[in-house]
Length: 288
Ligand SMILES: [Fe+2]
Ligand SMILES: [Fe+2]
Image (cartoon, rainbow, N blue to C red):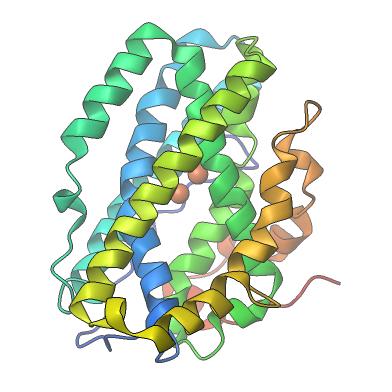
C-alpha cells in the first residue's frame, strides 16, 4: 500500500519572492491585499491545529484508504504551513509588523491539546469545519479568475497551489469524523465555534493593517470593504450559500462538485518543473 493517497499528493514546492514586494501586491488594492495577507497570517495556525488533530486518526481509523488520505492531508498541510510562514517574510513583514509567531500558537496548542485529550472526535469535527472554510474559498478562487485579476502570477501562484490541494483533501477530515461516528450535533457545534475562531483570527490582522494605514478612520475604505465583501460579486455573498450547506444533515464535501477545476492541474503537476508551474498557474481556465 502506498504511503500517500494517489488522489491527494503532497507537492514540496518552494515559493520565493524577490524583494521588494509592493505593499498592495494584490492589484494595488488595500482591501484585497488585507484579505489575502490575513489568510496568509492565520492559515499556518489553523493548518498546524488540523495536523495535530488529524494525526491521531492514523491510530484510530481502520480503513487503509482513509489512512493514506490522512497521511496525505498531514503532509500537504505541513507544507502549506511552512510555505505561508516563509512567504510572509517577504510579502507582509516588510510592510506590517505582523508575524505568524505573533499570533501565539501556544494558546491554540494548549486548547487544541485539551480538546484532543478530551475528545478526538470533537477535534476532528473542528478540523472538518476548518477544512470546509478552506474548501469553499478554494472553489471560489479557482472557479473565477476575477479573484486574482491584476495580480502578478508570482504572487498568486502560492494561492492557486494552495486552493488546488485544499480541494484535493477537502473530504478527509470530514470522513475521519464520520468514521468515528461523529454526530450531527457535534459537527454543527464545532462549525459554530470554528466560525467564531475563524472570524477573530481573520479580523485581527486586518484591523492591525487598517490602523497602520489609517484606514480605520477612512469612510471611503469602509465603502470599498462593503463592496468587496457584500457587493454584487462580493466575497461573503459568494461564500454564504456554500457555507450554509454545511448545516444540512445530509451534507458531504463531495456535494460541492469542483474536481473538474483541478483535473488539469493534477496532471500538470506530475510532469512539470516548479518554474513552469509558477509561470502557468496564472492561466486558470473557468470550468466548461
Ligand atoms: Fe492548507
Ligand atoms: Fe486543508
